[in-house]
Image (cartoon, rainbow, N blue to C red):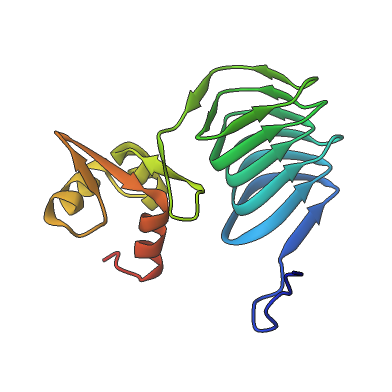
Amino acid sequence: MINKRDKRSEPEKILDVDASMQGSLIFKDPVNLRINGRFDGTLSTKGSLMIGEHAVVNADIVGDIIIIAGKVNGHVRAIKELKMVSPARVMGDIKTPLLSVAEGAVFEGNCKMLAGVRSEDGSMQSIMSPEELAKYLEIDTAMVFEWASLGKLPAIREGNSWKFERNRIEEWVATEKIK
């Protein structure tokens, strides 16, 4: 059976960057971003990010699905998955629930496999700490603890600690429950 796209769905958003850029790039909506040139700064994206074979990126990166074939100097946090394919060269710390490093790829730094849970569709969902959530929401960590204790945001309590499922937090943010 051939899967056809629903005509009512939004067209796929693709951004292909083949230039030198610097600064902060933040994408709040899912996009397929490909960087083939040079980028210096910070990068935060939803959707997929591809760092091309000839790309040189000096940045801290946060994204859902990240594929690296070029050079990256900086910390990388993949919410769902990180793939390094030859001739990738990553110099910096990595955080991800799912990591794949192909033969020929080079990684120098520390790696932390984030705690994750499998959703009903089988995909990995990342778990955020209170500190990570505070940074994500751009609020004080004390506010995260207060809101969690009062039931104002979706949270999981395990003993004396709190954990937050990123997909549930994103749904909560999308319904504009932040006051």
